Image 1 (cartoon, helix red, strand yellow):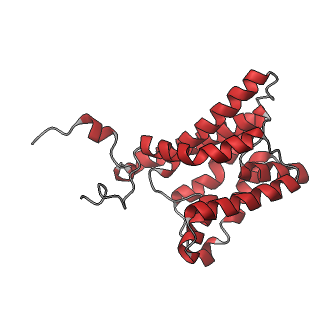
Image 2 (cartoon, helix red, strand yellow):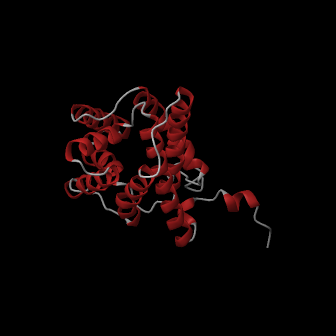
Image 3 (cartoon, helix red, strand yellow):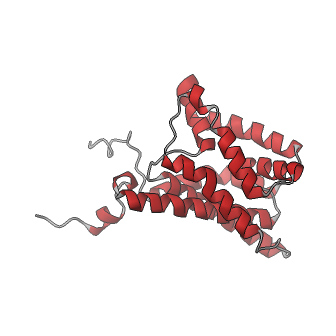
Length: 218
């Protein structure tokens, strides 16, 4: 038997790895997402659209930010049934892991005070969030509640993923700002950069588009 090139072993499709490895990737990715969101909160330069909503709801209700992340995740699952989306183990982990990490980190960290540290936290937070999303999505163990809304709308109504995401996040951002969430430079950077960065993170973590000729064995 010929030897399998090491690169093929390391960069193979994440969905083909052992289940324990895939679950570990999901948990690690969601943990990184929690760290990244905490970094963006502490930078105080604006959050991503969903986190603007989470922050606004936390301010209005007095609940912890992480708990609000969990509750919004549960609420976002409600439209899945009419949209014919199916949750997976990754979906369940998505609801809880990041929120728990955020609440823990917020208790032991404080806001950045220098302009350079705020900029570093913002930039690093966006990059780390993208890597975490790549690690979480690559194993194909279920979309998160928020991502499932976009894919469900795409399949149910024929609206492109990009347009569905844009429409949802504009509505979420507007609601979050109305509730007192923090939008600013970080929101703009996050919104513009997160798509390409997540795509790069997914490829880095071994994700392959199964609709591509290579994935189909062409």
